[in-house]
Amino acid sequence: MYSEKVMEHFSNPRNVGEIENASGVGTVGNAKCGDIMRIYLDINDAGIIEDVKFKTFGCGAAVATSSMATELVKGKTIKEALNITNKAVMEALDGLPKAKIHCSLLAEEAIHAALWDYAEKNHITIEGLEKPKSDIGEEEEEENY
Ligand code: FES
Image (cartoon, rainbow, N blue to C red; front, side):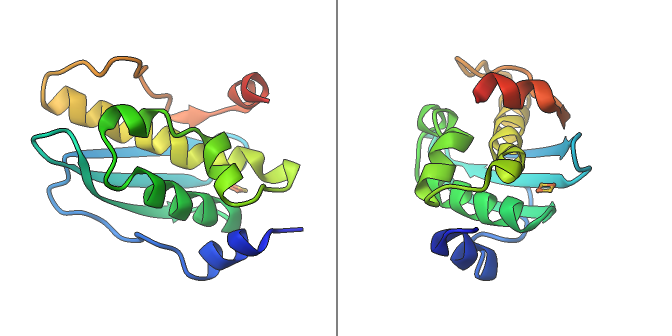
């Protein structure tokens, strides 16, 4: 039911941990299951995401999608990171069972929340970034799929 890539990222998740004095930190919860995700971003003066770490009270699918999402945003510009959707993360993992799609939203939303935090701290506006929700509900999932 899970792809090999999902199993591999679940068993050996990349970028787990935290970053001290991170440029931006984002925490979101999934209203559906109550799981929580926190993402730390280290962004340099050129606006490149130099480092990223995550911590979660989430299921295996949340761990695997966050692991892949952090790999995908590392080294990218803020704009590029914004374009990495949960759909792109799922594709990179060769798919997720339908019942687990909501889990993949945690990483995407936590990255957005961390970027929002970074923008607020630096008094800048990131084009295309909307104020993050602290709880991800069914609605957003239905909009995406
Ligand atoms: Fe909660 Fe997967 S069941 S994140």
